[in-house]
Length: 281
Image 1 (cartoon, helix red, strand yellow):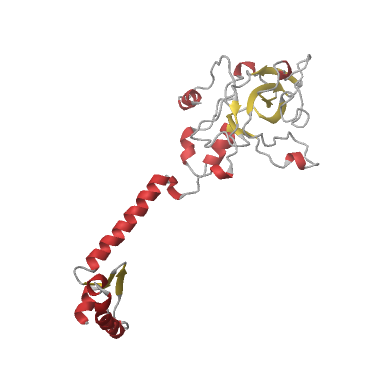
Image 2 (cartoon, helix red, strand yellow):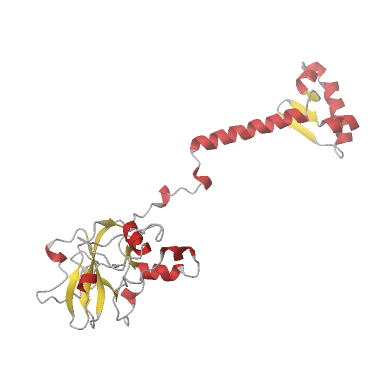
């Protein structure tokens, strides 16, 4: 979050946080978050500093559960302070209670990622790995019989989840501290194919009609410039059936002579020769 980055940029080595809970990663570092099947969270920088002791080894467990899971089933420890090892499959993807989605080292509060490095192409990948964790980022672990690590399978689209960080003493195997459950975070909804706008530029129907009309008007305007006062109007020659024979015969003979050397501009009721071609004729 913004205030954590301000602490980092100000050189603060530790901070006292109250009522901490997992937060969505900053949008400038994780665009399109959440996605259909993933949620990117900030790692718990400086959250557990007061619970860390020298000569001890710690890790972070990340738990996830669906919002529909009951409050009673939201506990992540047993009565001996041992962490739950429930899996995605055992909890029906978080429907029956929390499952362990990840396990990683405690992020360093003394040497956090530098926000300025995000603009460096050579460093941005490392900054993102240090700064955030993406739940639902492993699409193969569920189907790999040889996969023994913590499985982090894709989340369900259009579903609300909550997340929790737990500090685990890896030597004793007991929970030393934990955050609150996060606020509800909902994955994106699948967009139906019929509702996807594939028109370039997302133009509306009104704009399409206006564009079509303007195109026709421009065409007619150009035609007017190309045929000024030099059009042979069929109606002038064919004012009556009896008078039409000779003018039409004359026009036909003229066209036969010019067909190989001129271009014609034809409109309903009009037969026009381009100006420079009429002069040549």
